[in-house]
Image (cartoon, rainbow, N blue to C red):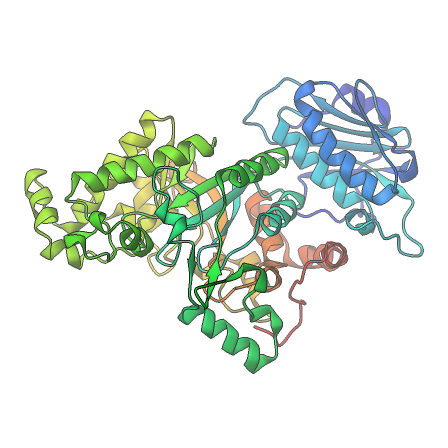
Length: 534
């Protein structure tokens, strides 16, 4: 997995591992770092070469980054360059990479496109922080350190989930978050696109979902944010004017993503090695769907959850997901499935008939029947089903993947993996970035046992990775979102990338202190390491 490539060997000779120079502050911590003296002058990095056409988008991504720093264009070509991006022995599942920086230039080599992107993230961190905004500070470093870095992740799934339903984020704001994820080698963006309050995805089949369900008068969550902003004199809690419109004399707040905008975000993420996982929450958290199309609710009352006794509801769900499948190329799609209030199903004659006809025991099994039905539909379209850990209730197919979020249900991962199901770890005890912070939060994440300690070796193989969730009930602006996410996203990125045996809080904090300059250069409104702000 870790290779010393021919091109790398030509560039420099190994000088052994020692105390890292101040310029080598990479997050997540790499597996192997060997210092080799001086690297190239940054001003000499005027061309990028690729050995495979597949790497041209990665080359353009790096080209734009260097142009910001150098203030001039950087050539991109097929063939040799002062920075060489080299794909060797292609293996799409291998995310490892090697970066070699020597006086003659830089080589980034990997077995996959995503490995190259990971290498570019490391190269980006070796460059001065001013690469992020093009503003050269006095005394700014002029050369790269001479290093050979060989690296690869422990977990494949390293993600963030953003909830633009409770409070909306524009395409540009979403892209900025994707940029920041790529810098720290996070590769899964879980996009929560529908919930009780709104629908954020344009649907050709069901246009009312955005015509009537994307904007609403200020609700209790909005007023709570406004009140906090006024009480704390903190403008990051105020609802952005750009998402407010007036209709019939009433102010409405919201927004949605057109299908073209969604395709644009997907393409943007793909260049940065990030897969987008859409979440369409069913059968609960469906108030907006039931209000727009009350015929899919129990008794046509327009109230969540969806009525699972009606064949029309099942057809609605399948057609909804068909449009999602056409838009999103990644194999995983989330059905949500959490926090379903099943009491209506107990009184609904249609749901009770379904329970009887399918020989089910209760409403838990009714939801499980729906989930399994949808999974068959997913599979028929080449997709795999994800859901919050409540989908375990009532029984689950072995091919479904579980998001463990309920930290107060510590047996979820054990139960799911014992059944043969894959699990993505995001327990609220560590990974809910909407939860308040204090000066010990960061260390609790870094030192915490996000991976349960009582799993067998076979069960550990079913842990896909981990992600943090950004629920936005009380996060109405990009600035507030950044304050809640950074720098704790960097701690989670290292938890998901670096082996437990080499994680060290003091070492991480030392590197993090340097990275705060980079966050400032990026314009990120991060929470200071010592602050009285929650």
